[in-house]
Image (cartoon, helix red, strand yellow):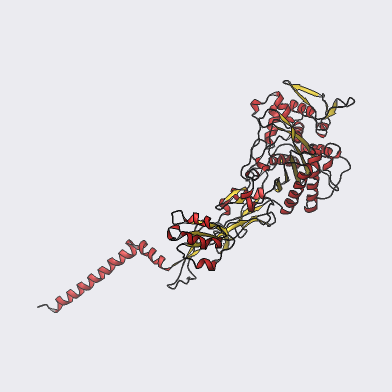
Length: 583
C-alpha cells in the first residue's frame, strides 16, 4: 500500500513531466518552427490591396498632353465552355459590334481562352452580365489616345495592343508602362486595417511621395515624359510645312527648330503627316521620323561647315583674297559652279564671298588648303557620321566614308556637300554649334522623366557638350551667314525686326544605284540662326523633290522666314533688333 510520500512523489513527477513537455513544445514552436508559424500568423491577418498600374503620359515642355490613356474594355471567351457556339455567336456579335461569322470563327477554335475584341470604349454591361460568366467575361484595361491627332506623331510614336511601337512610346515603353503589384497590410479578424501596421509594397515602385523618412514608394503607375517640344510652335510649323509642300509640289519635307544653348528640340516636323490614333491604316513608309531616320546629301548648306573649319585652321581669314578659277578638273572629274560666270566677273574673291556666293570651286579650294586630315576632324567634331543620341528609335549615323579612302576628288566634293550623307537632325545640331559660340550641344527631345505625381526622376542626356571651333571663328561664320541673307542667295529668309543668317542648299539626289545623280530630283534646303547677333534658335528646312521650284532660295528660305516669324511671335527670349550692315 502506497504511503502518502509515494503518492506525493508521483504527483510531483507528473507535474514536472507536464511542465517539461510544455517547455519542449514552446521551444519547438518559438525557436525551431518560429518562421513557419510566424508566416502562418501573418497570412491570417494580411490584407492585399491591388494597385492601379496605368501607362504614363507624354507631355510637351509646358505640360500639355500629347499622349494619355483612357479606360477601355476587352472581352474574352472560353470556347471549351460554350456548348452551342452558333447561338453564342449570334447573341454576342451585336453587343461587340462584330459580324456573327467573325465571333463564330474565334470561338470555334479549341481552347479555354480567346480574345473576342480588345480595348473598346464601352460594352453593354447589363447584357454582358446576363451571359454565363464561364463562357464570356470583360476585363478592364486602358486605351491609348493622342488628343492632338497628327501633331508630333513621328516623335511621340504610337502604341499597339501590348506596347509601344514607334517614337517615344517605343523608346521608353518600359518606363511608361505601369508595374503590376499590390500592397500587403495587416488587419484584424474582420479585415479592418490596423492603423499602426506597416505597409509592404510588392512590385517595382515607379512613383514616390514625401513620407516621414523622405521619398517613399507610393505607386506602380507608369512614369511621365516631359518633352522639349512646344506644342504651339510644333502645330504652326507642321501647318507651314504642309503649305510649302503644296506650294512647290514636293513629295516630303522636314523642319527642325533647336535651342542652340540647351540642345532642346522645340519643333520637329515631318511631312507626310499621319494620325497615330489610326496608324494601322497608314502606309508603313510614313510611320517613321524622317528627321532622324532618312539621310540625304546636304549640298551647299554643308559649305558652312567647310568655311568654319578653314577659318579655325587659319588657312584663310574672312578677308583673304583667293584666286578662284571657273572650274577645276580633279581625277578627270570637272568641278564647276551651279551658274556660269559672266565675262566681266572677277577671278579673285574674299574668302567670305565663297560662302556668300555659294561657290563650289572656291569651297573645294578651302578644303585643299586644310588637307583631308584636318577637314575630317571637323566633320567628326560637328557630329557627322555618328548618332546624336537623341533617345529616339531608328536614328541613323549618316554616311561618312573612312578617312583612309578619301581621294582628292572625294575631298573636293565633300566640301560642298556631295559624297557625304547626313540626317536633318545632324545638320541642324551642327549649325546650332555655330550659334552657340562654337560649342556643340547634343540635341535632346526629352526634358525630364517624372513619376505620376510629376516628381522628377531624371533629366537624361547621353552625350556631353564639346567645343568644335573658337567663339571668334563662330562669330565670323555668323557674319558670313548674315551676308547670305542680306545680299546673297538667302534673301527670302529675311524677316522684319530681327536679323537672321543662314545658307541655302540645292542638292541633286543620288540615283538609286548610287552611280551618278538624278537630274530631275533635288533637295531644296535652308539652315539658319535666329537672331544672328546672339542666336537662340537654329532652324533647318529641307524640301524633298520640289517640282515648281528646285532652289533652296525659293523653296526653303521662305519657309525658314515663316518659322522664324512664329518664333519671334511666341518666344519671349528673342528681342527685336536690326543691324544696318552685315559687318
